[in-house]
Image (cartoon, rainbow, N blue to C red):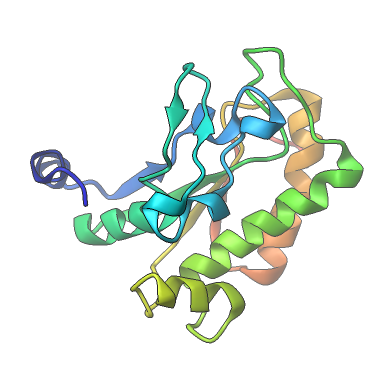
Length: 180
């Protein structure tokens, strides 16, 4: 469903990895406009879309599943950027309270299961129903986007710990050096 000429140009670059869906896109300008991957899978015409930082509505026609398929087609390792409970720090940032971060951690774990879980797991079944029964080869998770400072460090650690506990083989990436 992607433009063949653009995919051919990407393929010509022979990328080793592809970072997606894009940092500021993941964060949103408010918690309500942050990218929520579960709204980007399934029939395109049923995806609700959302307003983004650049002032227009995204249809989410290019969602988590399509990004993973594109990586597979390109032979590029997927690098999924996940929201760390913060909106863009360059634009009046909002922070998910620490006692509500569990929802964002679970969303991340569910995305990983969607990509890598067996076809009989909760989210692997959804992936299989979307036409890809075999797991994708997700290798990298970037926690947050261009985030820094104490609010980032505070949120990075519990997300890191939750992912490493369940998926120790994944390589996790921080935006800046973190002491935690």
